[in-house]
Image (cartoon, rainbow over all chains, first blue to last red; front, top):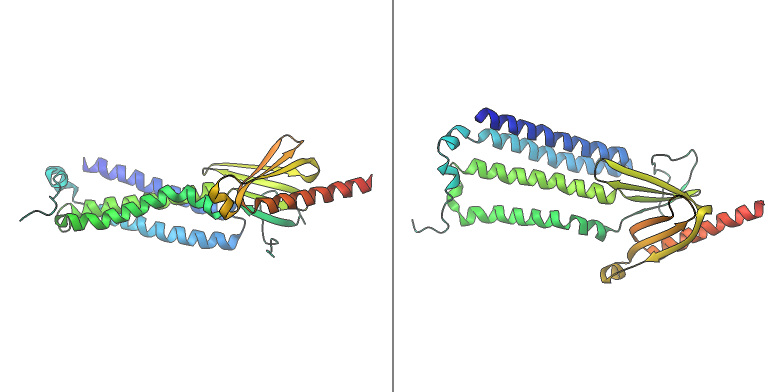
Length: 84
Length: 182
């Protein structure tokens, strides 16, 4: 099961990376002004890479083994403003 | 006065001088981005409020999955925002000494480039519809031609009346030049 989740995540990771790369290519290729294209690509790619790397790190920190053995840990949401 | 000498586009001819470049009005771009921006604000607000309403979520075994989902949504929104921005702001109308070039972007993979020559222009109309377009002065310019593309539309561009006048001036200029040659 964990292998399937990892594989699914890997597909999503490469899929979104491909979309990000294509966006950069598109901006650089079709912008009328190369200077503003570079600025926009730097902004997009910088934040995109930050989110993507953080996403991979956060995914690796999820203990899927425990979560799958104890699904209640995921589904039971803490009660707001509990009296304990 | 803008300098368009550095502007380059697909199909630009050697020595062709660009006179003007028009993009959609910033407010029109913003209206297309509104939903994504609204969702981003909602999402960020939600992610700030959830740990305050449910303090148990931080430090519990749910924390990594919560942060992972938060980050995934943000990543998805960032990409969506740029996909919409490309779709809207890569629509461009270029006026050169010889012709008008319209580059229309539809999504990431569809791009339509059409052009018309000034001598085919029959009629030019500007349209400003609605309260906000009237206040912010943006609207459509419709160019009626005798060519294959009977109607050429500049969509939601700033100062449509000025643009219409400019196209008419250029068309008349070309018409007079051609008449004097005959």
